[in-house]
Length: 265
Image (cartoon, rainbow, N blue to C red; front, side):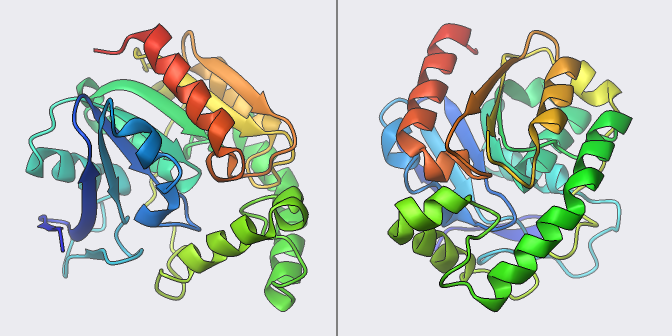
């Protein structure tokens, strides 16, 4: 079982394929298994790295780790451990905080960014306001789903996933069950980032958002895209929060085309 013993954490990870490094950073409802629809698509051209964030799946923070350590820090440690100098990051939801943490600490490690359904912890007022505006709606849906998960859609996906692809909806829940209870409740390690951090991004960046996303609303994602120089924003209709999971074929094709056109080094 591949466990990287880092200074900050013990990290479960897997690598698949060969070529330029492509790192997948999962959201708060997932773990390394979340990317089962992406790895087979990209492993022929890339060295795909999937992992469990500390506190998720099989990964744990080290005892006594500094309170200042955030997700971006452990990922930099993992890249060092694997001798990866530069990488493309595909980040979904919570994983966007990890990607932005790498940008804040060591931007030279990035060659491209794909940010799916994530505002990345950026504290621009318009982004924070958009998230706050949706909080009551989101909390209500979380409570409804928790009380009747067999018949109510998981807000980490979208309503269509439950009624149009119930097996996929159930698969997402099964992946989430691989995390310890309460894994997503502690945001202290996610990090927060001033608007100057996304404004400093100099690598090709693609943002993706689901039209029916109730966690990361379009207004927040558009505001983030406006901060990132020369970024590209794509909105998926008929999709909720987890576009990579709900609309995997379209997502994979979009990312592959973006990487070809962007030509990250």
